[in-house]
Length: 76
Image 1: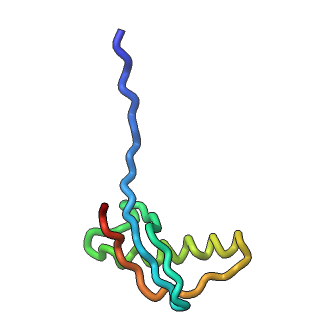
Image 2: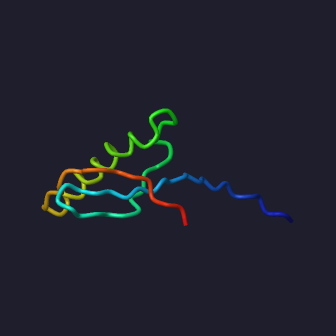
């Protein structure tokens, strides 16, 4: 008997490089594609990453510096 195909939920992620005001850089920060609007594009990634940073700093107890720029990572 044939098996029923399982439904795989695939959510596309877009990766960003983040440069902070203190000179620190993080690479490949994930932002769900559903959070990005086609009209504004990458402008909506910054508030999403800032919210991630707030959550990280609350867990670690160390504040993050302000974000200077967010750029889309290069594809491999």
